[in-house]
Amino acid sequence: MKGRAGGERGKTMRQLDLCDEEVASAEDFDRAEIIPLHEEAEEPRPARGMRRAGGLLVACGLALQPWLYVLATGLPATATAAHWPVAWVGLDALEALGLIATGLLAARGDRRHALAAAATATLLAVDAWFDTTTAAPGGDFATAVAMALGAELPLAALCGRLALRALSRPA
Image (cartoon, rainbow, N blue to C red; front, side, top):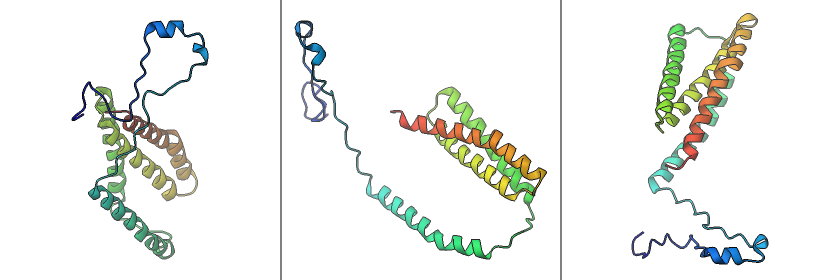
């Protein structure tokens, strides 16, 4: 820290100076007051650009609300997609790449595994949602639910946990 002598860390740090003799001779040591060595530091305020980006994203999310109503009331109950297999193969390929990337980065101890894990968790949750909501009644739906509960959602939870654990650790 600039201008501070003796390695002082700032106003939030408190020093606790007790020598071994004082500790050993303390009669009421079991009733001693516990003094925290440091207080919780306040979170720094985000930069102006970050605040602006955050505000823009919130505004865009709110602007989508009327569009959701339009979609909910205007879309047909069924639809035909020209590239249906490409869409599903592409989604599953992205999931596979995400799982591989997350696993390799995590095994190497690379903190960037948090990014891959967060993206992969999202892809897996989206896949479970669309598999179950687009499945035909009967066996297809049962298979979709089994895949969602047995594979996609547990893997999404694992990836989410990996991402959150990595982000909660100090750099």
